[in-house]
Length: 168
Image 1 (cartoon, rainbow, N blue to C red):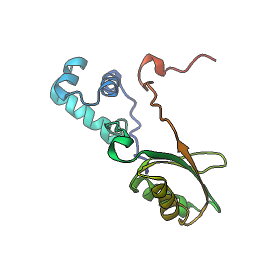
Image 2 (cartoon, rainbow, N blue to C red):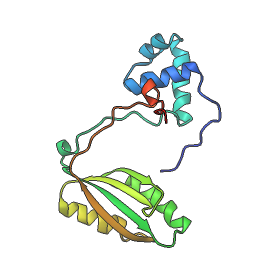
Image 3 (cartoon, rainbow, N blue to C red):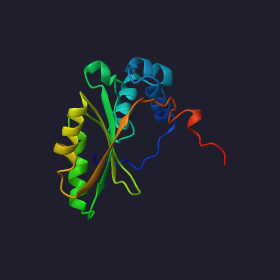
């Protein structure tokens, strides 16, 4: 998952308003966005395009139930590297998110190097995924699989009042 270079330009009030609205409803039309923010449709279109190009808005996604599409087995796979060669990490970072069934990949600190979230059709498919796509990669020392029994989606936002950190 290569990082998108971000423009150093901070978000102004109009950009923040657009981001808040898109976070609430990513399918909101340009016409409705422009009305809500109080800017011309052409200006709105340019600003939303800029937010995407700068990596502020990374995408609009449908939340699909894996069971409904024949992938009832979800797992989080902890991957640990040996040797920590940059080339191995870069290859993993580029290729693993593109594999079928990968819902997310997270490069983390600590004893584990990556967590890979997958949804697959069966336990056999999960075993095959781990063996065919993870443990045989250069530098991978260990992979430990944990089944996900229930997945809960957070309701928090990044732009609303609830995004403010709790007082210490």
